Image (cartoon, rainbow, N blue to C red; front, top):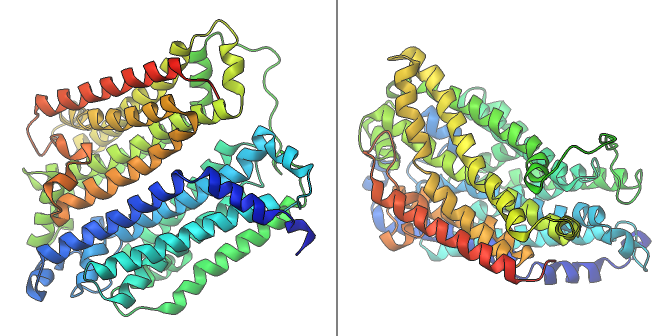
Length: 527
């Protein structure tokens, strides 16, 4: 064995032991979400005529293609059943691999455990090799199980294999990019932000290519996933592209790792102020999330402005009756423009929940790395500390949704009845999904309250809600399956009338979860 890899097998076993809950739950959520959607589509569209009618016009709708990618074959049941899952599920597979690599490399260095491990008989690259190997195994397992599940649900085996391997390819890319970014900075959060930036840019490139110049899609790993054409005329050679990119980024990560010290990044940290100015745990928590909150806020404000700007022309974008019917079904009843805005807001609510789950995950990292004990050693109470985390996790989504409503109102109102009128309509619409966001955030806080390391499971909960709630209603999944997602219980403004009962019910459940989290956090040991 290469001397730099000595000890990697044992570190891999340790990583798998630590992820014995996170990994199965995340993989199961992805696989079951795919299989459930496929099975519902098979039952909903039993013949070729019904499938052709449902698929007609989807590839001609720029809004749908930008979000989900094009159908590989409008006559294929597999394409219809998985067109919403290919890229959205691929994002979650890439996120899973990114979390695994960061958790077992950069986080270990940031906490000081990597230096302790390095003092034993362990090669320099053993930690990185173990983390990447676990991520690769997770990506391959997810892809193969998804392929088997889709085949068992009634889809053809070659297309199912191509679909599963498309997810695997995105996972490999996520692992490679993360390994490279972890060499650049000493901060786990900064590394995660760099990965999100790279993946986000890739998603945008794919959307631009699918809507205009097709060659641009070939510059993005997400474009490769669609160009593989699962359930169409599969291009198996495309699978070599994510493998080559992953290999190149991993080679770069190894080369950069040889040029830095353990615990440091190639980009040096900036020193802080000579004298501290934070006087409370709330101020400290807000300071820790300031950078990510500003980035999220600016991005969502711009997204709202873009969505508000194109909303008045949605009737021209949705050129067929079938596409118009699809938008109404995903966004509720009412006018087509209102349905379009409701659809975008419902997707945004799920995305904003990721901010809250990440905030809880940050608190988990602070505790597992030992910094929480230093804070609690002062006059700070546990209630105050958990309250500060809850403030970011619950109030942050409110601010972000308001930013979307403001951005959309500025551009939409300028083209319609005025900004003031648009604000009166779109701000309440943007705030309507918040009880569902709070409920999922409450689950993440409860997991953190039970045990710090369990906070990571909040990502699996969010993934399950996305796959069940957003895909289930369109594809006609059973009501009890769709009902597992809180996002499907709320009125989708402005396409539907406001209903107070579901809002209060989900808010009450969220409050109960927060109370349980606070009680459990006070009772358990820290660390």
